[in-house]
Image 1 (cartoon, rainbow, N blue to C red):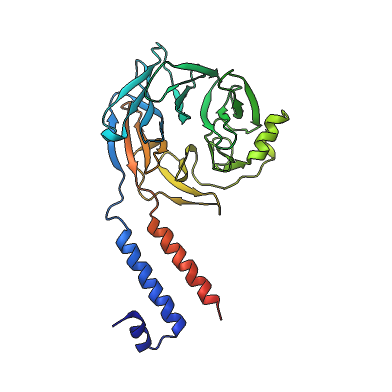
Image 2: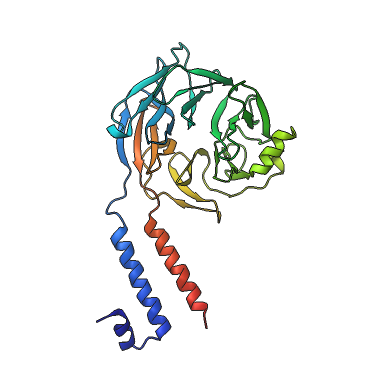
Length: 334
């Protein structure tokens, strides 16, 4: 017996029968495409070192800063090996502890920074001669605008609750102040395809919100040497959790907060959806390789890190939401 015949048999109106039929189809879709298990899957561990920052190149190869008790290294792993191989691309070879802050890939080069001495370096993908591009004290994150091509760094050279955002010239090392007066200690940054910059507040001194600055506002701050006063800005999205540790612009904007939770931020509504099964432990760096989301967890007691592939919010849920949004509209039709 078909859905419509059954509905007619029990005396439902035609409009209600359509809704019921669509609901059952949606349920079938959900059942057919929802994976059986959605647990985060361990890829590799670093038993004697901590991973401070990660990034992927356009082909999915992994780059990360690996900090042990004796040194900090930039290491690469290939997608073709399932991230099981490893190659050291750079070794700080410093007797002091070097704390990695970010790894970013752009235009055929991998850029990496550390907050101990404030250096920002780069080298060709796959290895080569490193270049010291700039020094920005207590740098935290660096990203490139997809519109202007300029590099921007979140850093706190003044110390205290004085984190700022700068445009940094990676040829000369010169910086231009873009956002000031954050009243924050540090925070990650990310760009959308329109060139808008998103800043995630740390939550240690101000609310754990996401703030957005348009490309035109950023360029006005640079061109007119007139930095944006953060204290006058309204938050783009109020968020929960006591710290936004990392952002990643991949298949959307992902947020890492509270050390144990991940979410996918919808920049159009705006809103956020929880990642269903984040990896166990304290979550640090996150990145997207164009196909999947990855996250690092760290055991600070053991001084070790684990690298996971993480299930993303299911497309089934998006289909489910879209179908029932249509139902709601149909119900309002006389």
